[in-house]
Length: 530
Image (cartoon, rainbow, N blue to C red):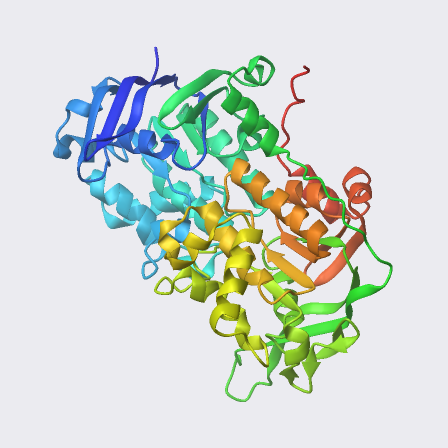
């Protein structure tokens, strides 16, 4: 008998159909992976199980959780079940945690709301929940605040809150999307261990097939509010038939075709770069201390080349990126673009700065939502001594948009009118408009669905071939770096610990840290033979 049974679940919001005849079950101790891209309905299905639906929602069908008919219960009864019978882990831990409360109080609050126990007992149980989530009190005191923890540690706090009352079902909605590859592997192992120890059912929601390939017992694939395929894992990979499922599988390991020419001469040269940050004084008369984020890094990027820079959060790759862009002064070494220094004295060299541009991870966050696309795309014109005006300016904007597969009509829209993939295309158009030679892609595809990611990678490969662009791919997603770069640098604790041809590094890694990173990459089963 299933712990959770969803039968013919239909839902609409203000009359618009969102879910259509969704059916599946989860047994105690079983892991069910729900796969689908943005808009597939997977998160709405999870919210329907919890009955945390938005205003204007109407759900019909049957959702039975451990004998409770969730669609028939009133809010008071549902509040008693949430936390006790079912817990939820969200994608972004910083939005799920209260920034002004300690981690101990937040986990204890879950216990105090549902059980009549003293605060002392609740804090003791909170400490035990955090210990089970690999945050022992001797290393992570209950008095810490969320901002004092890393992303993976914050996600463990959210998991501790969800399992504090040992619910029968745990729903994890994209719990590892924003995490480094090794941290992702650790969090997935933690979720699997907790499910086994407590006999919990685990509903794991993700857009990436590889994440659940060797973890889930069964898989449900959703598209546009419907279940298009389901079955045991990994057997489903050999019996997959639906075109959408096959397209997801193909996109998960997509390798774009690249035909650009790589020249021997370096375009970017980084020589012995050092970047220090001042630390707070420990006492009134104590000497100033510094943290060295980048430790004598040197490398070249050849013209027309795609170079990957990989490493976990805190390794120094973003600091190095800001130095290359001339946004942060370095304490030692030099950075040359096309033979010219990026810094002129202590100021960035404007003539050099206009030869490179950056595409960020979150296009929505890097745009001013009050500006129209035409103004957003034209923003880099401020780097030019004589920016185009009038019809010339308009033609440049439309030309940049058309290069990335958008139209002239999009110039008059606002950024909220576009999907995530379209926003990233606009970010690339902004990077192209002043015809740079080097484009830095800082986690530019890590937040995208796999099929959209494949489209953006194809676009970048095509642009690189057509316009002779040079790319620096900065990412924690090694599967992307493997498929789109010629050479790769591995960065740890501010140093380059390994570099070489990308295929050689992935097939024959030498440094222990590189081996650890590659070993943590989730692997898809071998593709079905035609």
